[in-house]
Image 1: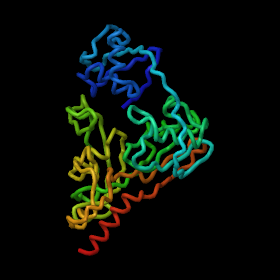
Image 2: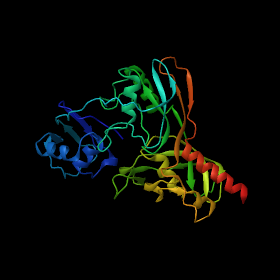
Image 3: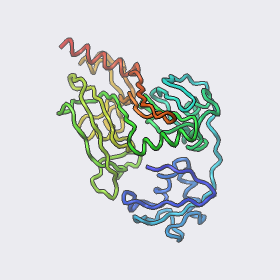
Image 4: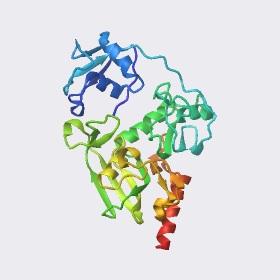
Length: 331
């Protein structure tokens, strides 16, 4: 999904088949995530948006192939305020850094999350030595992880390095490996989930398997079961594509949602008692989705040297894994 920045210069977007029948204001909010829906609607009503060179209302339903031209005033934006937030820096040189993002940290500022972000921490640790390609609110940010997903994330220190790393993501030559704890146990030891993903038909903040090609994009995920437990499993996951929430949606699709994934699994936490089958023990072990970006393999943007960076399992997921192993040993 593309993410743009509004400015006073004309920007033109072409409606894809997956965006067919979307409202004009929804379409723009999807592409311009830094702007509020109200700002977008006001701009449309003021004549700042044209569809095939004609004015349109916010509720106008779009068709594939239509050209949407936008000229809206840019909202005042600043670089994230530098915040002295500890970071686990896995690798650092003149071209890029690799950080182990903790769970609960938002990658860049957005509505409701103006402080405590990875971008703010990067500003403190690296100052002006970050790429500007992503705009003022995303210095150095090449890719993202969900707020509650922990693990390896790349940071570019120059626009040239940013472009080369982004090209690797675009060409799918970067290998991303996740570690997940799931509810249930996959039927197969390893498999590929090849199901298209699109925006949920009724809940816009969610993604879903959408078989209609006009509202979805191809998505492919390889998984391998590492360990099986009573009612749970540890899984290695390699997404071949990079759709929003892809790993979470595909694991939920096979009946084994990521543990404590409120959005796709219906459970927000797990206690020690639930693992040990002891209703008296309500000690919470995990209160976020058990998904960790464990490894990233890519080519160094300056030397071309193969890089393989791994982040250790965070304490909360390690605690659940230890309990699962202990309970299995006692059975």
